[in-house]
Image (cartoon, rainbow, N blue to C red):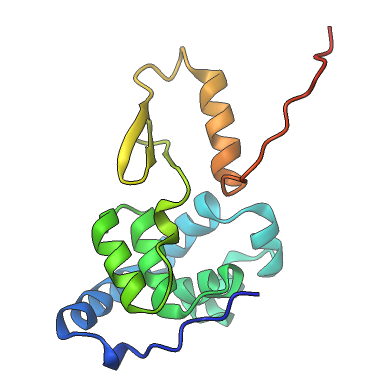
Length: 163
């Protein structure tokens, strides 16, 4: 089990404290919680929070609290991670904030599928762009599944396809 950071916000440089406060105001809104609930939490994570987005938001300390609970990070690390997955932070700033908060730079260790933009990002770069969604339904389905499952380190390919 990962231990949340012991770094206090007050220990950070002023510019980082200001950035975190700005991001926190945006992240904690109920409409952001809905987006995180639907697009970024897996079914297992939603279940761990009680399968009710409103009660999870209310009872866990709003959006950052929900994320911190299921991802086992500090609230401040959760704020940074949420801002990153919502494209409110670039990779460099996200990594700087996570490092200052005593966490790793896990945001860049996994790809990100931004379905609305049709882009797959990895380590701060676009590695795949889907230009014609109607012709790429299968790849979109696969990317949706990987995104929903949190980009597991290993996937299994069936040896024999039914035929």
